[in-house]
Image (cartoon, rainbow, N blue to C red; front, side, top):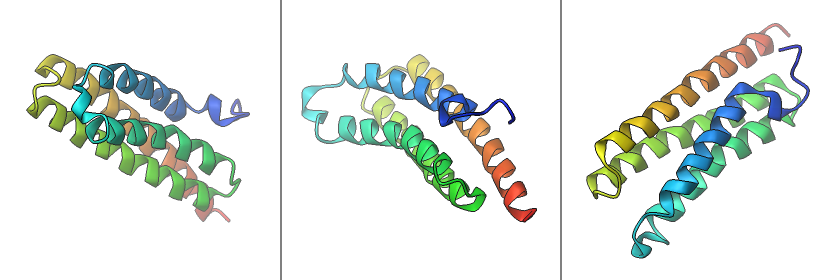
Length: 125
């Protein structure tokens, strides 16, 4: 963690950013009637991931940072459910679903590691 100078250096933020870009591309292919429903929800959830990681980083307190990361984690779970919905509605095929779900789970795994790091350091004080 010594090479971390900004939230932009965090691996969980980088993975979240990559996922957000993929979601952004994906939702542009959805039917126009989903603009204010699933498209809007997926856009907000994907943006919430990086927004909360960066906001937590800026708080400079391990416990507070971890809480914002938990919110980001909730948004990642929300994205998985939204991908399931998109697959159920035939907006994406099984291959696209599995690819994006895998990317989301990878982001979750890295974020969970970061949360563990934050909690461990919060408890040292």
